[in-house]
Amino acid sequence: MAYAGSRTMNVGTWLLPEDEDAFDLALRDTFPGAAWRCSQPGPLGLHPVHLHGSLANAMACGGRGVQAFLHLPIGASLPSTVALADGVPLPDGPPVAAIVQLLRSTRRHDPGGTYCDHDAGYRHPEGGAYFNAGRLAVRWFEDEVAADTHQVLLRQTRAVRSVLIATTRPARIKDQNGRRLTGYRIGPAAQAMADASGTLLGRTGVQRFQLG
Image (cartoon, rainbow, N blue to C red; front, top):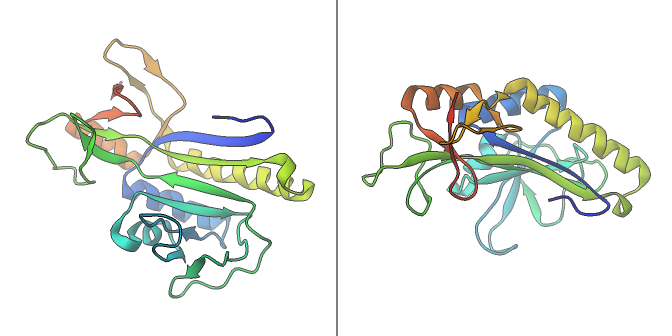
């Protein structure tokens, strides 16, 4: 949701870990200083969070694997609440001004949308498996950052989106009534999985889609 005075990017995605890896590799080609912060369960401070050198390591940290965060500007200085993972150089840029969220796509099943996993062969005994959309999102408020920082955030956000566009494809999907949904991106591995298995694609709520 956009708020007055905010700058927002929010792209719905269907990505398998292989697609995430391709996106991350291309991102680090564009921004060699890109690093991802892991996400831990519970309130802030309950568990340590770390800055990792790759998206895959950030997703694997703590075994949660739900989301990871990219600090902007790229190379922003390390917040006091974040520790460095092994082998990650200390960033020495300006303070964090915005945070990109990559929310992972997840295999779920009806009823209730219970989390399954990324195993393409998984079949819950109740059936109804579907692949729920994640997202790539960022928001900041223009009046809360300096004018030059705002311009940096605009440029880097556009670049991050361009990397996503370059490593994914438009999701050509339709619901059970034949209506098409636009604006979502799907990774090559996720599309191949959905094609081969017939797995439906989902998004928040009860909507389900098929490729075509």
